[in-house]
Amino acid sequence: MAVPVASPSAEEKTPSYVAIPPAKPFQSTLRYSSNRKTIYDRNLNRTKTTEISLASFAYLFNTLITYHHSKSSSVSEIEHRLNRAGYPIGIKMLDLLLYRQPPRSATRPTRIVELLQFIHGTLWRALFSRSADALEKSTTKNNEYMIIDNEPLVNTYISIPKEMSQLNCAAFVGGIIEGMCDAAGFSTDAVSVHSAGEGDEMWPGKTIFLVRFKESVVEREEAIKASGG
Image 1 (cartoon, helix red, strand yellow):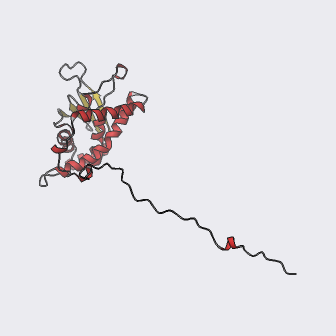
Image 2: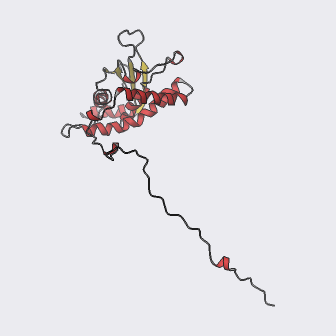
Image 3: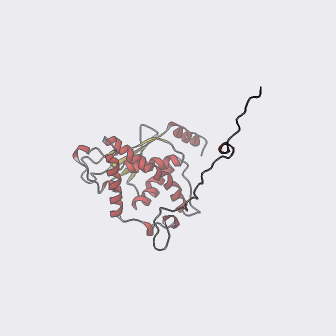
């Protein structure tokens, strides 16, 4: 006895497709000036002519602090967020400042003291138009160094309420230092920021940036010294 076999319908034989609309042309969200150039068209070696005003910096930095304050529940969390905001800037600033150095004298820091002197001088001048006030090494711990700024610009126009008196907005600069150290191959355990102006009538805003390098970095430094490098 023959078994009837159902034949496929026309719909099953011919698959159906939906037309995909063509892709829309790319629309950049960058705002162009009248000469149709953006910040990416600027020469990286132009420094003096591209500085922003102090008022603009103060406004932007205050906005940054307000944003992180709204997202934080404690002073330590605000400082941590400011540190993380400065970290990628430090990574980029290393290559930028090395690029801006004269070709014949451009050298990448390869020792701890060389790197800290680069930060104390070249980085500070690029950010604040002056060098930091002091660079010191701990007499008890060989992995700790201090960069001292008697009057950090980032704290100049900040009004801090009494309940947040322990807040030091220079944690943002601490993040820049940490990012530059990591980018240079000198990993740190932390770059902490400490207010040291209490009782100092001349420099009430004095701030210490305490840089703690990892033990592996110190061991490498000692090995270079031992080999006569």
